[in-house]
Length: 160
Image (cartoon, rainbow, N blue to C red; front, side):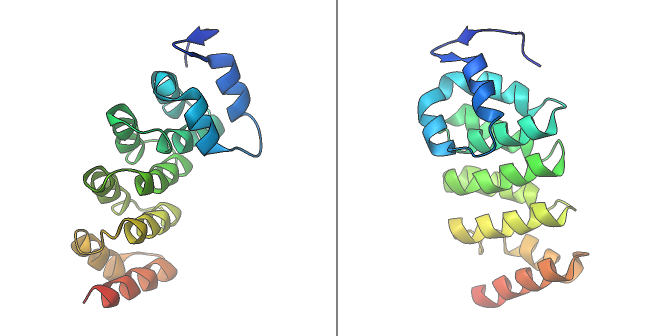
């Protein structure tokens, strides 16, 4: 976890931590307030052992634009606890299509139903069904959760 810094760039780590510890979070407003300067600190939080903070940090990263944020979400999609991977799958909705596709490739290979559920939702939002058709097909045939299998099957029928 990060050292106890008071400020880094144009944001206060204490203020950012206080924001993330709240119950109701306005992620879009926080993304504008803390911005790109907060990404290295957010990356540390996403990779930390505090699942709650890591998850909230990953959601916040999803609302911040830029290559560094893209890389953090790509990493979060394949490592860490399921809620962090869900946040990465959700964050894919706010990335450009090539980056979203990279994140969703990983998320659609996940074994956790909640991760795959959010990945399928993000695929739909980004209109990437055709690009990820083989992954969706595999889920519709082989996934352990019947609800997810059916959702993938329905998505396939709409593609064809």
